[in-house]
Image (cartoon, one colour):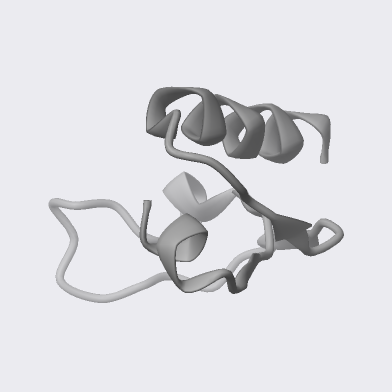
Length: 63
């Protein structure tokens, strides 16, 4: 909603393996590999915020 109203790009990001190095019950992160993937910037237009959120979710899933 904010990106659509401000007409700024959104960059889809996917982080894989985070649960192996940082768990909500742990006090500190543990060493390990994490993969971070960045998608192409997206311009979101319109006021169908539910549809826009789905576009971003789909873009993240494709990474």
